[in-house]
Amino acid sequence: MPTAGTPSDSADSVHPLTRDALRVSLTPKEYRLLHDYALARSSRIKDSLPAPSRFESIVRPRNKHNEAAVRSSLRVFLGSGAALKLADMIIARIQGVTSRPKRSLVHSPNFRLSLALSLVLLLHRLLYRFFVRLRANLRTDDARPFRARNPRVSQALTSRYAPAVAASAAGFALGISPQRQLRLTAAIYTATRSLEFLYNVLDQKGWCANRPWWFGSWLLMPVSCAQLFHAFVFDRETAPKWFGKIILRFSPGYIQDRPDRFPDELYWPEKEEVVDSLASMANLKWPPFASPILFPSTPSTLPASLKSVSSITALAHPSIPSLSCALLHPGVPSCNTAFLHHILLSVPPLARFLGAITVALSAFRLKDVFVHPIATVNGLSRRIISLTAVFSAALGVAWGSVCFWSNLLPRSTLPTKRFYLSGALGGLPFMFLGNSRSTFLYFFRAAVDSAWKAGVKRGLWKGWRGGELWVIVLSLALMGAILEARPSAVQGKGVRKALAWMKGDGFADPVDVLAKRKAKKAGQKES
Image (cartoon, rainbow, N blue to C red; front, side, top):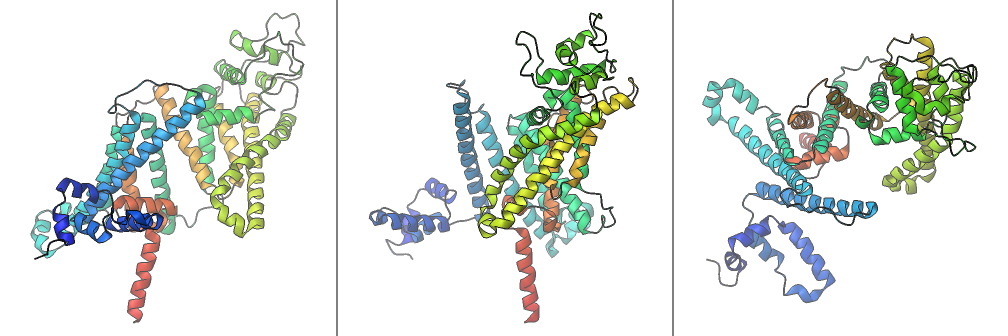
């Protein structure tokens, strides 16, 4: 019998709700660290804080896995809610918004997003743990009659992939979040990542051993640029804003700025109007160009829908035969010279822009900068030069091919679809950009998002209610199965740790855990 004044007696006097709240708040190990830290800061609070041994006797964990799942989900809920609130405050301060319409807590997008994320984690851990225990029980001798009566069900439930596949159903909890675009982005991201991991598995098994030298992830770029360039011209609202800004900003040789000496009283079109005029030309099946300089008596040499760019085409060289050439490079009669002119004009601003981004991203590798400063700087310099050359060439090829198709193809041949070809040609220079799979996948995700929205806009397909949730669930199932079978195929140490943490295995890399386990077994065999 425990005597009076022992930790057991003091623990029994604690209210059950208080004990449960402490269980899901801190682990005994975490409390010990906080207790030691508090005493190191101030010894006066020693008598007011319970000792770590008393705290451990109070909480007395019953089901560590369930309590850890609830504890982690609560922390995700509070942490994500605070982060979203802080982000809203920063955005409001930048935009100068003084007040926003108040919403109830239940209808708050941030609250529902935080709730969805916490529920995904909680359900994922509970389902994974449940099916792990179910799989273990079904493999015992006592479950042999059940396995005999239900062979197919037993085979599915005793599979090594069953817990990971079943736990992926937690992704349906994201349906609580009202941000449809966020769910669509998550669906595209998880789908592309899971397919990337599947490709790594096939590559490790030798299925891609005989692939040609030119085969690689860069092949995603012609497909991605084809969709993005066509959407930028015809369905700009479906293309990413950053894509349009980059094209308009770094195409000074093709998208003409207002000349310095151009009279203020005359109209000069905006850059977006120039792109819209190209779409109008395509819809009109590329009408021929009649120079106002050669035909001064003609009242109008342009169709009515192209009047907004008359100030540009009126200055075009008389020897230019194509209306697209007169719009894109009016002062240069040769398309080849216009391409070189674009390279000379776009390289300096592109180098500054890409250099700033590359240097900013290198802040995550400060350790390499201090350990190997010269090698790191040389690597950054080569990266900036290669990025500048590839992006400048890609933009030039995309715009230059518009003129090329106008001179090569008949007017009625692929009048609008030729922008797909121009975008695909613009993606070819990325073949020379090595070790950039993440960049290529980023463009590919943007292209998939754009293609989906453009198809919905044009009525090619209809949105499936909740379809993005099914994509997320299936992608999580595939990633979980690959992590169980071949952890090394899951590219990215942080991704592997995050997936293992979602299962409740701690924030540890499964590849390192597997290597330590193999080393331990090898040591036992030798001994």
